[in-house]
Structure formats: C-alpha cells, structure tokens
Amino acid sequence: MTGIWIAIGIAVVLVIAIIAIYNAIINRANAVERAWANVITQERQKNKIIPHLEDVVKDYKEFEQGTLTKVTELRSALQGLDIGKVDTAKLEQAEAKTGELLKSLNVTVENYPELKASETYQKLMREITDQQENIGAAIRIFNQNVEDFNNGIEVFPNSLVNAMLNRKEKIKTFSDSQAEEGFEYKPNI
Amino acid sequence: MLYYKNNKALISLLKNIKKKVSLSRSRQELDAVISELKFFSGSYQLNTKVYWIIFTVLLLVTGLLGYWDWSQRQSFQQSTWIIIAAGGVLTLLSGITAYYPHHLMSKVSHALLQRDGLLDNNLTPVTFNGKTTARQFQQRFSEFHRGNYSREIHELFKGSYQGDEYSFEYHYYHFHYVDERIVTDTYTDSNGRVRTRTRREYDHYDRYGLILPFGLLRNFAVIGFSLPGAGKATYKPASNRFNKVFKVVAASEIEAAKAMKPTVVVAFEELSNVLSKVNFEVNDAADLCLSFADKDLIATPNKVKISEFDAFIEALEGEQEFQKLKAALSHVHYVMTKLDSNF
Image (cartoon, rainbow over the protein chains, first blue to last red):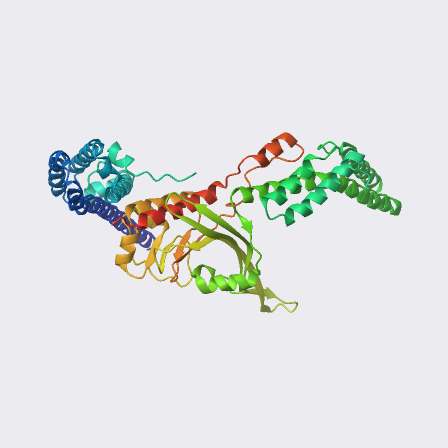
C-alpha cells in the first residue's frame, strides 16, 4: 500500500514539474514577443519624427531631394515591420535605412551652417539620437529575453518538455553593431 | 606611557590632528591640518619593537610558569596565582602599549583621507538632529516608514552634482532603524512543568540614500527592496532582467509606461549591478529619494597610512573618486535626461 502512495506521490510531483516547465517556456516566449513588440514600437516612433524632418528641410532644395528619397525608403522599411512576428532581417533593413538617412543628413547639413546652428535642427537631432538610444536599449532587452528563452528550452529537463509539448524553436538574437552603438549608456563602474 | 621621544611626539601630533580633523569643515581648514602634519620634524615611523618584545617575553614567561606549576601538582599554588595575575596584567599593558600607537595612526590616517575624499566630492557635513530629521524624512518618503521601535538619521551630507544637461543639489544620508519583536521561549521549570516566557528582541538595520529635487515625475517608484505602503505593480516593462529585480508603482499604467522607456529600463538594470536593494521613490512634491543598502558610497578607497608618508600625501593631494556615488548620481542624471522629451 505504501508503495502505491509513493508511486502516486512521484507521479504528482512529476506532473507538477512538467506543468511548471511548460508554463515557464510559454512565459519566456511571451516575454520575447513583448520585447519584440517594444522594439517595433520604438522603431515606429520614427514616423513621428519624419514630418518634423520634412518641415525643417523643405526650404533647402538640394537638401530636400536627397533626403526625401531616404525618408521614403525608411517609411517603407518601417511599414514592413510586423509587431506580431519576430523578423530580425526586416529590423536590420529598417536600421540600415535609418543609418543611411542620418549619414545623408550629416553630410548635406554641412552646406547649410545656418540650418545646422538652428534650434529646431538641434532639437530634432537630439530627438533622433534619443530615439536611436531607445531602439538600441529595446534591442538589448529583446536579446536578453531571447537568451533567457533559448536557455529555457535548451537546458535539461526543459529540452525534454519542449521537445514533447511546447515544440518551440530557438530564436536568433538581433545583432547590428550600428543599432547597438545607438545605446550609449555605460555605468561608471 | 614610556614611548621613545619620537613616538611620544608623533602620538601627541596624531591626537591633536584627530581632534582637528573632526572639526574641519572646509578645504582651507583641512589644508591647515595637513600642513601641521607635514611640518612634523621627527620620523613618521612608530618604533614599538621593544614593547612587542616585552609583550612576547612576558606572555611566554607567564605561560611557561603556569604550565610548569600545573604539571607538578595539577593545581596552582597561591604564589603562582599571584605571579600569573601580575604577569597577565603586565602582558596586557605591554600589548596595549605596543598596539595603541598603530591603532591611533590607522584611525587618524583614515579620518584624514575620509575628510579629504568628502571635500574632493563636494560633500559637506550638515548639522542635524537624528530623530527629528528621520521624522521629517518620514513625512516625505515611504522609504523612512521602517522600524517599529526607532528611526534615526546617523549621517547627513550636502553635495552638488554638475551634469551635462542638469545640475542639482542633493543630500546623502545614513538611516538607522530598529525593529522590536516579541519572542516566546518554552522552558521546563524545576518542577518539570513546561512553561513559556516572552522577551523583546531588537533587530538593527541600516539604509543609505540620496535625496534631491527631481521635478520630472510625481508619485512614482521603482522598487527593488520592499517599500512600506507601496501597492501592487502598475506596469511591467518587457525586460525579464528588470522584472526579476524591480517593480514599478505609479499613479497610472500610462504614466509608468511613458517613464519606463527602454533606455530607462536598461539604466535600472545597470544600476542594480552597482547598488543593492535599490528603491527609486519620487514623492508628490516631485522630490526623489534613491535608497540602497550599500554603505560604501562615500568611503575613501585609500588604505595608505601616515607612516608611508609620501604615498599618503600623494593620496591626499590627488582627487579621490567615490565611484559608487558617481554611478548613483550619473544614473539619476541619465534618467532625468531620458524623461525630458525634446518635443
């Protein structure tokens, strides 16, 4: 009789452990999705900046032509981002387009010292820098959560539970040195 | 005490400096104390070898005598007791005589470096009443609603921080609180009956922190250590790492989400690697109390003593950096810049 109770006890503990591992994997997968959604939300904040940028450059013809093409390309890259689907390739594309636009802005503005010195332009550049920092930080959070998730499905016995029940696949972290450079906060220690 | 002439002069100088350091408030006052030290004509080395030798000999002689007498008759004679007692007192006195000057030198060296470090970091001591100040802080921040028995501020310094975008004045404090609890013990009395008795026990705790005008938020807290009276988390950022350490309590979810931008979230993650049990509490007057358990924020990192005179003076003349204090202040500044929107 005692043997049966011990067997039942072990079975109950096992079932509880499996449920806990299963739920932990789901939680970590959800955390990755949230972090991804956060990255995309930050990326889409650029849509708020673009009209300001267009306003600033509209009086400078030479400036306008080159920059507007880059703005259009960036807008289309931002539209390609899906909040519900982790797609690091598209994110990389949007970041590349942002990089190109900023590079073009920096080169062209040298020809317009009065524009470069204007308060509106300075504010705009600060806001862009701020946004790029937020995107960098959001990517860092996404990568941390992906690392947690990947560890959560690879270590034993989680790997066993995942193979039988969750069937989640390892997620690739996002690596883009330019985007990561955007986040400049370093502690003093 | 019978120290050598140089020892005597040096000890007298150290005692004098100890008094003056505790009274110095400004760089000029501290420089005057350091000059006094520099103009000492004797050696900065203490010579206590003789006292250590006397101490060792007395210890050995008393010990051996006691051992010899015990091994003869398994007890001490009355005369041996007297010798052991006298030997013990003399050993103790010679030990203290040998140890005291070194202890004094360590204390004075540390006091000088500590005061210099405070001045290097623009920190000046504030005159305050410990219990009254704790009560005043308690009215402003939940952080001070700790300790059911007593609450007291032990240290208070005023400082200023100059950042790229913001500059602010702050207070650094050391808060000590005591919890009283009643403990019930069970024991068996002389009649074999089981009885209980109660006694009061006191647990002492310390917290440290910075208080400053923040301005950009109100009624907002990032809590890494229990905060009395704080409700449930109102917002959970996307970061697993942040959520493991902190919870965010604000007036509304939208307000919390606005404040907890990714850069701010990561900055808090980094802060938790530098400081432990961190609370970031902004009250309804928009004042910030950044509290933590680390006691070494304003502790001098130098361990050099006056006896290594050149190195000691070099340490005093150089800029001492309180790394953790700098990290805490730059964190506050960073969060300020991130919450201040450009548009």
